[in-house]
Image (tube, rainbow, N blue to C red; front, side, top):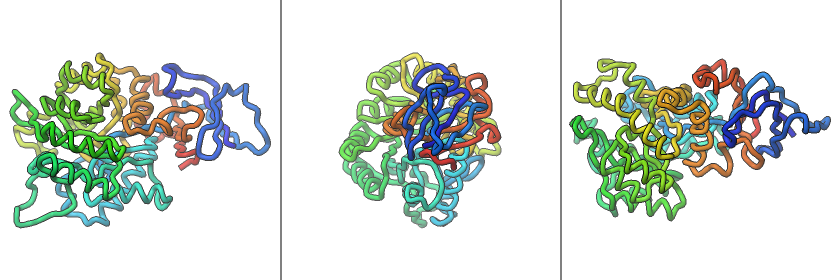
Length: 406
């Protein structure tokens, strides 16, 4: 048995720190969490001294794209200029960065050619090292929607990028295709952005289309996430049975109330917007209209975050890593939540317990308690004093996944 003696323990169950507690690990799971003074050590036990550190649960990033490293990479062009093998190797390296940053679980919400599904399977088989993964395969959208942009001339056909469906039966078929290929999450594109700043969002999928996907998900016992910015597309998606709303810088009071009542999670992806703002108009290659839209997102998102907080919506950490945000820098999202009015403890809970619940993995991960998988992070310093310390690689001293140090 392994016995980890912590200095400060943040278990994500209690909203306070626990000092001088020990975590008893048997195999891959936590056997008990006890005051250190109450633990009897036998000669066969391995005692691990973490008294100089803060121990937190392994963190969860609910929104990534593993095939792209992030920054100023051309997210769309990479899908058609890199081979499937190239993308798969890059996906493995990117996911490893997330794990080393303390994110022992990630969800990939779209990758071409099912490289995310293949990577998840390789990690589970022990072929490569990486975090636990939920994978959506190819996101589902309507013809010409957010994920079906005309980035190449019509004479060039590119397979494997997006699951396109039109009408309820077309979307149902696209959902079934993702499940057939091994997806354990479905992603839809409910409402994209619009450069009309008086109404900066545009509904893409109808209620009937989203309801068809959500019904397939219920039958398969998987969850549905939705790319959505605002407007009726979000309301219809909540009614249709979506489990999480991604991005959504324009949530209304009515929508946050509905989300709280129905247990719909909010993944605001604040990091990617902040990163885009930092890169600037020229470096991001934005048009005038596109840049004005980004500026409006970066101003208005805090209002949506405050509305969600006030309504009691469960907010999760999701970075959109792969798009402007970098893999391995995932903890920036916690600082962004604090910038938006959340306490450091609430930000850590968003990155652990809430994320696990969003991914329907809370029976196994998200908190430090008996019966859970021993996914743990040793942190130099106290993130409750300064949550930004989680972003610095030198402060992530050790990462355990299933009781084994990576």
